[in-house]
Image 1 (tube, rainbow over the protein chains, first blue to last red):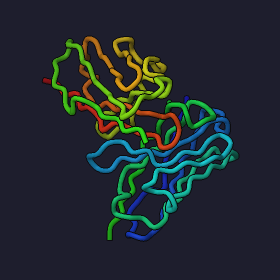
Image 2: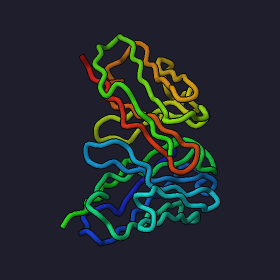
Image 3: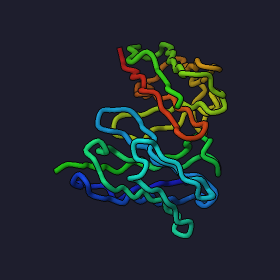
Length: 120
Length: 108
């Protein structure tokens, strides 16, 4: 059974940093692209970032230059380093497995999400 | 960037009825890269359809997807109580990946 488990969310002040982790099990992690999607309270889904199986990275304009996605294939984990946090970054952050190696595939498994709140 | 516009915003129907949800793209897209997801309150999105018309694993055949170019449709025949949720379309032909704003399917 494929499972994705996010962690690292919490309350952070504007300008602060958080690192989210997503541990993946039940699949050969290294051969799949991975993504982060967020959902602000009461709002829709917003793609944040993706990393291909080969390590190529992609970002939404809203987070480019502030967030960094990375992966550790030995630990079957994908990370999202979030710096210079803003109030508008407040959301539930979902980790999602991409169907194949390449970014251009749909998200076939999702974690339950971790809540990030940016507030003073 | 491809902008996806879903309609209607809210759809009120009764169990047993059929539902038709629309997703319109701001420019023509390859249907290979169009997906639909279902989300219930407090839960992660559930993959339903990819490639515009291919059901994801475990999705019942009352869910079907169709469309091409700029107009795509998710059809749910014979609504079950568990189908009332929010539905999102997604375009995933590279960066940026975009989602529609969602259609809320509520019980009438």
